[in-house]
Image (cartoon, rainbow, N blue to C red; front, side, top):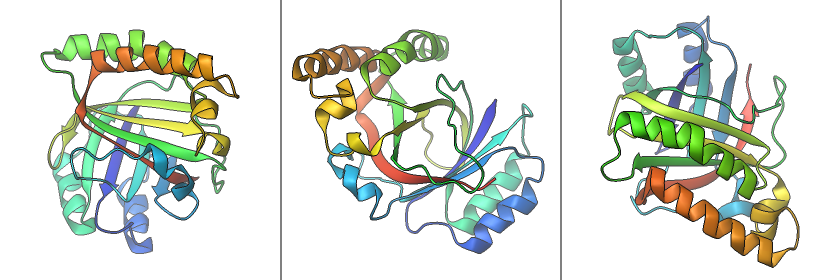
Length: 217
């Protein structure tokens, strides 16, 4: 499955912008919007901004075809003051949101550049097949989507990770990493996850923000 991801850095998209996406991509499947708001601020302890570039909102559209009219995407990105990223990748834990439903926890959005020296083939192999099981096993993740970036309208990224966490993990290390109050388990999970993550991404060029996720269609 391919996914078209729009990132907004100055302001969330307007209703008119979202409606324009509906009309421009009538064959798109599921569509989601995530915003930074009072609810997602409960998870602000997880924010990482080493690049000093943090999105305030994200729109994601699932698209079944393998290609897209990129010049139209660039035009729309300029009109909406957004960045567009054309991606593909698996969903090890597919989101279970129904149309019109808002996720009661938070969406963790991680935008990253790959670890130094990692080839395209190695990035896909390690991230999709070796790191994904580690990420699922060491975190209290209830939704997980990997987006390998194929094309970008602005500064290119290598990957965008979308993970859903229960609200209990918003401000609790043990709930986030161990699904409970087991500190020893939490520390072990953090160690394993960090080592695995460093094989995939450059931690100094990876931003993390939590948002409130809603499915539009």
